[in-house]
Amino acid sequence: MIDILSLEKISLCTNFDQDVFCFLKEKYSWIHRLSGEPWYYHPFRIMKEIISSDVYDKEILWGALLHDILEDTDISYQEFEYMFGRQVFDIVNWLSNLDTNKNKMKKSDYFLKFRSSIHAEWRILFIKLFDCLDNLRTINELPVERQIRFKEEKRGFYLEVFRRNVNIIPFLYRDIFLSKIDELNWLLGK
Image 1: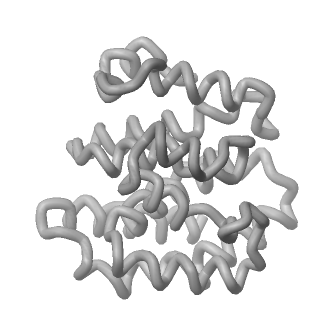
Image 2: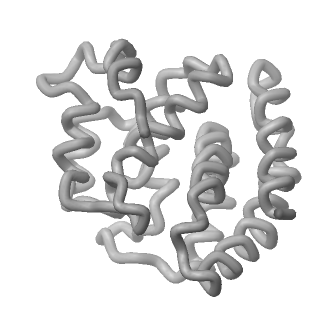
């Protein structure tokens, strides 16, 4: 279970009328994972793991916390950009599998979008790695067939993209990124 109290101590919401954690909880209140836990635990876990890795980059933390919100909620692109700014919007938009009209993209189109975006913004690659790790740690809630497909996707696309693009991660975060790639590889081998 998420330790919400420690998350509330993180003061990232100084410029907003509403606390971002409350905003996420409200937006995700009706969505639950197959395990039964609230969906918003997933982005909270990712953000906490990034902080536990001694990464305090504001755009990474915001991007990690909000990475699924465009896909999973009814928030408009305009509303999101107004609330969180252009840079965070770009990160989250590039991480989403939605086109410019908020329609779900084919997997192959999303992969092209993802590959092209990481060279414009390295944080996308960083956040996606932590997202993959959290999803793999909670994979047991999925039916076995979906677990297999999910792992194949992570192994066949993401792991390779992470390995090939280590050099775009700033030196300050590169060791963290490499250790998380090793963890991802280990989780995929289980």
